[in-house]
Amino acid sequence: MARSADIERVRVAAGILRDADGCILITERLCDGPFSGLWEFPGGKIGRGESARQALARELAEELGIELQAAQHLMNVCHDYPDRSVSIEFFLVTDWRNDPAGREGQRLRWVDVSSLDATELLPADLPVVEALRSL
Image (cartoon, rainbow, N blue to C red):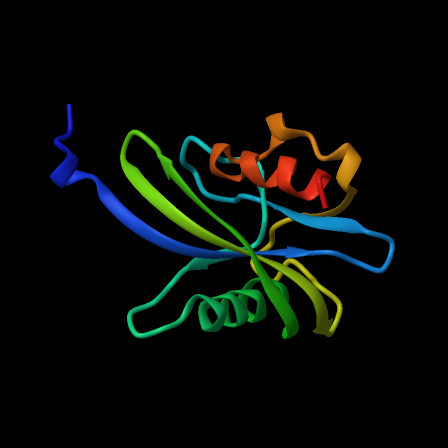
């Protein structure tokens, strides 16, 4: 069993893109790990010297080919996985340039908030589903 000092601690920024109809964009994970095939809100690790918003803009450009225009902080979530602890800053993204596309080969889906299926999402993303439904 790993000691707590051995657990990797990861800071992440994630974007919840919401279109004019209120649908939310989710992306499929491509990794070979235990979460392959699950869906998530796009984003990634916050780099050294980056703010969460800067990381979000960079990740959305890399993953989806979009230019972030407007985002507001929604919530922070901390989640412990067996091998790592993640701290995720979620942003509600309401304006961007370009049409989102899976630049890394990942599939994308626009989903109505009421149809978000928590069982399809990463465990760390689950608290966001309830927050979105209460907006």
